[in-house]
Image 1 (cartoon, rainbow, N blue to C red):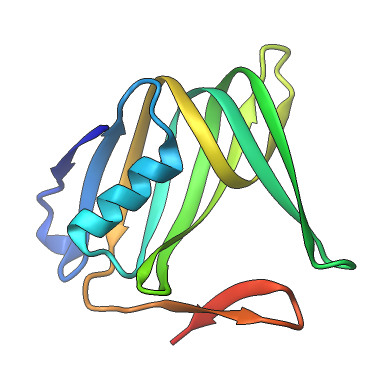
Image 2: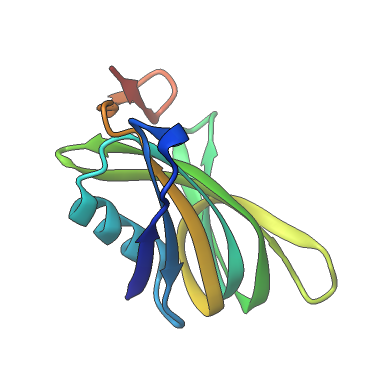
Length: 148
């Protein structure tokens, strides 16, 4: 599903950083969640690049507090993947945004629900190892916000 290597950099201590390569044709969010469970990451950040063949983005309509999902099924470059890691209901909670460039050089993006790698997906994952960041539903915004 993925391969990884721990970054050897004492300047990061006590944080721990990994280089993560998600396998071709694998689903990014599923692989990331699995990695976070395996490494017991409860707070952290994610950045990366790569290529995908499909992505489903989620948009929250603040007026209705309802999510609207849209799937793009085409080859795209990951121009930027950025996000954070926390915990909700004792499981990894990944809040990831993705910007993808299309064949015609336009971009689509937003809150990532899922994406399938087609080529490569190379990520940096930083584990804020001494921190625990939880999530709690906020009825006013309709979002799962940080709870410290």
